[in-house]
Length: 245
Image (cartoon, rainbow, N blue to C red; front, side):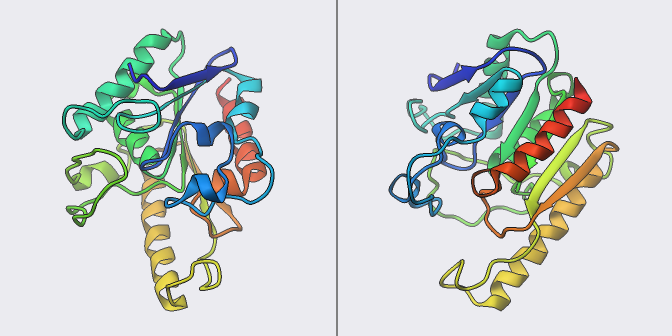
């Protein structure tokens, strides 16, 4: 079991929230300030405001956890592979003993974990909510320091094959426009446009994985859609969750 774990609420299907690369579970509960968010995100100025987890916990059980080496979870003996990441999620689910398969909600890398885990353990996922997910890499990622101890190998094309998830309910929520240089300093509009369109193409490919999928496009360029446009994200998740209950 990951030592850093927090849960709240009652009911099923539960939500299991999977954070992005290096992000602590606390960001699901309270939006980070600029000081707390660096270097992963810009954070939000002003008084602390709740994340999406407290609202989700009004509907059903919500479980969050820190992967190894993040937040309150100790560093692992070796960088975690995909097998280690899946085993960690297995232990979290084993501790819940749910009568219904939970809904996996993943942001960024957490979306990739949720999707690839569900393909391998279809009986353990009742639905997927992917928040601007990082598409499964088809080639090796560039070498760079990571904000958490991971040794992840590239996936093959079967991860994005149409129908790979059968009819697993899937909701993908992502930005509907590229950022501007004012919103993302250091890049030209051409670079920002190219990144947006490449990512959008991968997201459109991703929603073909399931015969029960749909996308919600948020009119905001930020990667942290659930923190910067929580009202839109919560409305979409609420409709999705009600269809499954």
